[in-house]
Length: 281
Figure 1 (tube, rainbow, N blue to C red):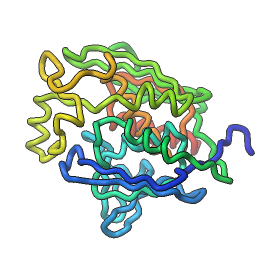
Figure 2 (cartoon, one colour):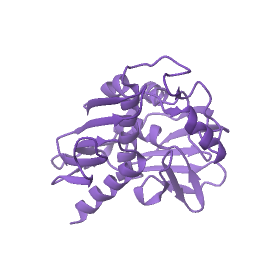
Figure 3 (tube, one colour):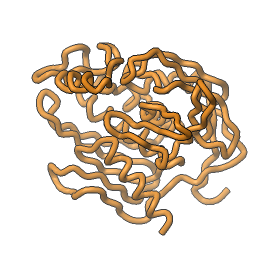
Figure 4 (cartoon, rainbow, N blue to C red):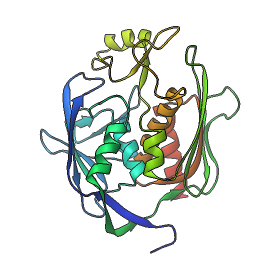
């Protein structure tokens, strides 16, 4: 085995889960099937088996979620599932779903529970994690600025700063992806959040029709209106959850120290592209 190479992994048995799409509002399901070494992570449409490989080149939207498109088919809101797969080191998987991955409770916890119950199979092939050779920065680093950067590290380390108006305020989180257990405890339970005013706007665009009161944290101008927070800094933790998912668009586990401030899906994708470009040079 080459230095740094780790075994490829898939799930030990198929996993079926159902729920509602956050943005479509439609009843949707997802089936995770074991896949052979070298397969990668591939979504297929239940309708016609069109393959949509998980690669940053296939990202077509990063507005309110991460959407992948290939062969005329799209799958939306892939980031929470990809986040769990990244944390568990799953490198080969066939994912059958309709147009959107179910939101479940707005977090990645249910995916983690189901993957843990199904178990993992280590395969005969290996995968080389992606490392960064030098610091890569998107945006301008500095206090109060929007930026994301990656530096060399032996595993995935994330420092995230969130800065929203009250009642959220400034939240900072340091997380190191050292095991699936650490992720399942500290990151996976953190839910999607949205503002009441944004929901009115999203509704006009026909988005977030599945944003029921049990699959996200809803915030108005002065308080959380529909739930009790699972962590005081649940908002920052969810941003880290999204980031871990978007980083898996590289197609391999990432070993880097990522520092991000005030960023979202489009910034995450820009960093992924920059990391990929740095591997070619």
